[in-house]
Amino acid sequence: MGAALRVWLALSDDGVYWPDEIYQSLEPAHRLVFGYGMRAWEFIEGARNWALPAMVAALFKLSTWLGLDEPRGYLGLTRGVFALIGAATAWGSARLARAYGASALAAAAGASLFALTAVPLYFAPRALSENASALPVVLGLAFALAPDASRRQRLVGASLLGLAVLLRLQTGIFCVGLLGVLVARREWRQAGEALAVLAGWALLFGLLDWLTWGRWFHSARVYLDFNLVQGKAATFGTAPFSYYGDVLWRSMGAPTAVALGLSLFATRRAPGLLAVAAVFVALHAWQPHKELRFILPVLPLFAALAGVGLDTLLRHLPPSPARLALPLVVVAVAGVSALRMGRLTFQDLGQYSGAKALSSAWDDFGPLNRLLIQAGKREDLCGLKVEAVHLAWSGGYSYLHRDVPLFPHHAAGRDSGFYNYVLTMAGAEGAGQRVAAEGPFILVRLPQTHCVPDPNWTSRLP
Image (cartoon, rainbow, N blue to C red):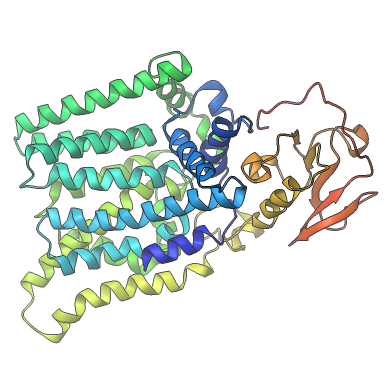
């Protein structure tokens, strides 16, 4: 059910939660495969490594081999793969719970708190580093921290955690957590082996940066300097320490309460795992700038802990109808959250303020992106200006898929001759001709049939 819901969302929502899901993954991948795309500052100054865009580029390339070389094809396949990664992550939660001795029933019930709840479903199809890294995190810990893990399993687990760091730097917290748990268990040899594997992945991280940015660990240095040393992330907004708890309570209160409550019952059997998950959340809560997506990689861990806690509870309850029904109650709580996911607003997700906070979080700017696809199919298109919104909130060339100049809202006026189509708000046709419309947006063809080059045009995202 979790996989089906995710794939359905992947094929039905063209909205944008945050520009990173376009300009940190889809757009640089489009540039790699098709040769053109808008460039965010991170991929100009090197604040991100190329692991995630390369992964998406591989999916784009696969799409072209399959004949899916139009936006609907390569975007649908990519979002579908991310959706299935989310479903596999739910399976990883069950696998992690089983590694700590939970029964199949308890592990599956706990995993439903990730598979069927509103927040993981909402984010699942989006090409975000948090989604890509969550699967190797949960599987890596399942292999490496299982009390009866073999040497091979521990090495595979450490490697998966190393891969997660390539996809999202912050998951390095789980690498440190793995070493901490092994040391706390006095498993010195196992800790040394895990450290050696992680060091190898760190070397690969540095090598990737050297090959792409010309300096070892360049992306990590620039990213940490921007966020921790200069504190510039706070310019995107700040929130109190309680932000994540408040937002999770608004968006899926009952599953959050159930997951946390059951996780407490796992304290004796999985103290290290619980500590690692809690530290991950605490460190993110300590940072001034917060977004709900930042803690997505830890949610499958709490689902696994809930499975372990549920198993502990079931073992201590006497046989009764209530004992038999308890796993079904957990799944029902998750299922109700899935049924309510369509009601999510941006306020529920901790995003925006003012009137927009009360707007639906689904398909936001989706109509605009579908008009971008239509614009890309216009044979006479030689330049397009997006007047309706800041360019960062559009799908960029990933949706337009035409190698023509794409102008932001503050670019030269319509009489400049630099473009012959505009994406604007209904009622703002001016002297142009409306050729398509969806929601509040319209695609307008201007009177000129040819475009003159703009010597100042740049592919840098404003």
